[in-house]
Length: 230
Image (cartoon, rainbow, N blue to C red; front, top):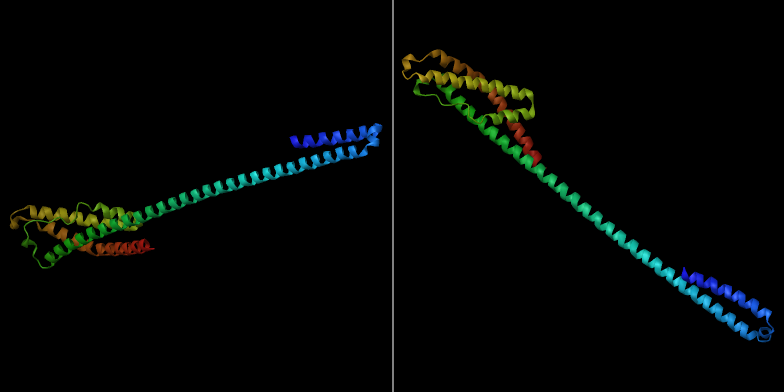
């Protein structure tokens, strides 16, 4: 802006000098001096204009540089945001994988519990079928203490399956109680057959239901394993 003021000032001075040159006779008789002074003024004006253009060019170059720096900084922010998003996505993926692995472990645990119950039921049903219930002197516990894990897994899938598990486990629990009452009497002659008949009925009714439950849990485990592989 200062250079522009100088150009205006020199232009005004040049105009004033022209008027002065035309007003005095000496300048009229020595026109070459006036022309020389005007030429110097014009050269100075053009020089200032050139310098002013250079200054504008430098300003534009500086603005361009600042714009590039801002774009580079913006690009860094975008890259950092992208990395953060990728990190969050990876964390979610790991959480999903961990959840699937935990679900598989719970299903495997439930299947082991169901298999254990089924083995115990088959053992007692065979004793009843072969009339060998007095071959043992005490009742073994059919229902394991950690059977609640099966309820939790059944509830994840459907109310119908949960109700079926509850009904089946009630039969097995009743059979445990009846067998414990039967074998609580040390002398076989005084043992009450009614407890034995009730336990036999509960276990025979529970066996096919338990087979259905195991089949449902096996299908769930296979589906969960396939999903985990994807």
